[in-house]
Length: 606
Image 1 (cartoon, one colour):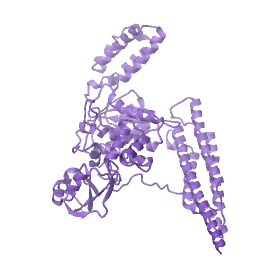
Image 2 (cartoon, helix red, strand yellow):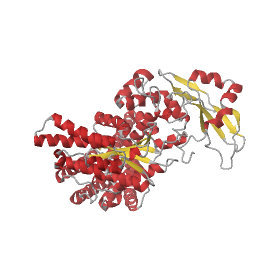
Image 3 (cartoon, one colour):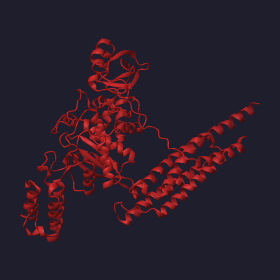
Image 4 (tube, one colour):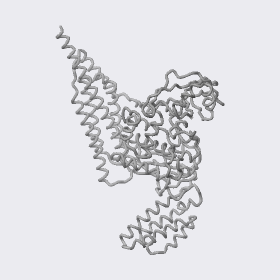
């Protein structure tokens, strides 16, 4: 009998081991399918200007991947059956056939920026080779399945087959888990920069009411109330939250923080009061998160470096996914949304530029708009193309988030962005950057010197004459008249004549800074911010994916807006937010963001 029990336990142990292995294989297959989905989406972004231009095969592939993933998740309990293995193999083989068909017709659509056919074919081959390798990996995982038999196998396999047919015929809506919590509209942030001060304050009810509750109206909190609750808000203290907050503070020490509760006298809604050193729904003190992103954005620290610093100074985090979650958290809101919540208004004048970025096998772009007076980054976007239609969509998103009129833009001579700006912003003044023009002139002079073998002194003389005309012109007419003074025969050379013709053609844009003080002669401020982006690109060689990179750019803009400049800067110890007349409450920069609800993600919160 003991022997029989031992055999039974042994059989159960083998079956449990097989189940564990089966679960690991399914997790690996799901991981590969997610990577394959990103690869196919990258192919769509690489080859087709707009989503509606892509062939139905791409939509079919993405749909099949989604259904296969959902079927695995819903029926993984039956992964021990032979039928499960066969049906999954059929689905993978179907995917492979569709991808082969797609490779035969995958040609860029008209409207995509023209590139050499050799480069296009090389990038396409990389993408399709990557997709084929992923499918081969899935097939290898499927070969590792070891089905085992039970008494109900035959009935289960018939039912599983029927469910498979119904599943792939049915139209499934894609379920997306929220990336950040949309709760928090009933949590109010008040000024308190450290735990010790808070504990003294929270235990003195009278002082807490005087310094916190009675001043809530000054902080502009209006979220969480019922629609019928209008007019000045008055509150009663109603004790503490049932469960206090346990937060990891600087140095790695975990401290327990009791949180006060409020009751609105008008609508009866209950609210929690959170000190500014605690973030909504995070286990770390907000200053630790701020320190991580200060190092990553301003000083170019890598994620691995941030992990090691957290481990050494603050007890560490579970994985780098925690930092990715923080990145999503700090970059979720558009810079203009946060600045509008904080009551900051722009001057109406901006510097705009696009930067070249990179994902694996994909050229992408950043779109940045900066206020030259306050240095605030008001718009940071990440796009696949810089054509007129894409830039129009990007500028329209920005326009929806601001509450002041856009008066003028300083930019380079990129025609698509000029047309997009004119289409979106009514009667806007556009000035062209002098530095871009002079840079192109110097390149033309270098080529001219190579052709004519003239001296460097001659080149510098020509450059200074051109620059003097550009600097001293006060209007369109003035510039055209002064261009006639360039009588040196060198300016009749095709290389230099092209630069003179360009200046004459766009004379109104090169002299618009004389008509509007807000328009500057160069785009130096926006170029300075793009240096941070370029530094991060050089460090990582390519960005991860579109969603993550969008969060990264917005996070970089938000951090740059609130972090004070260093001691050697012209505006030492002042942040762009301070220069824009934003209220700082004498708090550290990340707590200032917290005070202005930069981490409140409830829809229609304000």
